[in-house]
Length: 130
Image: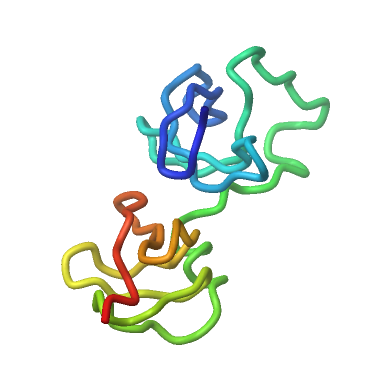
């Protein structure tokens, strides 16, 4: 079963191969956005079952570019907040971590944990400790 931060096999649109990817976002139990572990391109999930068909349009015309980490970070609301285990965070908060750098809260795991997406990958961090 796939989960955010876990690995799935998917077709990479840049490498044009079936490769291991890290799950970035899910809708229900289905991955919707993944990052290739080989070329680090973030793109929508393409099932390992079948290679997608080639588009009928000329190369580059009408294609959407893959979303970079910087674009995802820029789309988050609010100024960056310094990470501390005793601070509370919610999905969409921008976090400055002393070791991992700047990232954003991509999911709330349970009462005391959040998933934060950094350039290097997704990390589970504690928060709200009093």
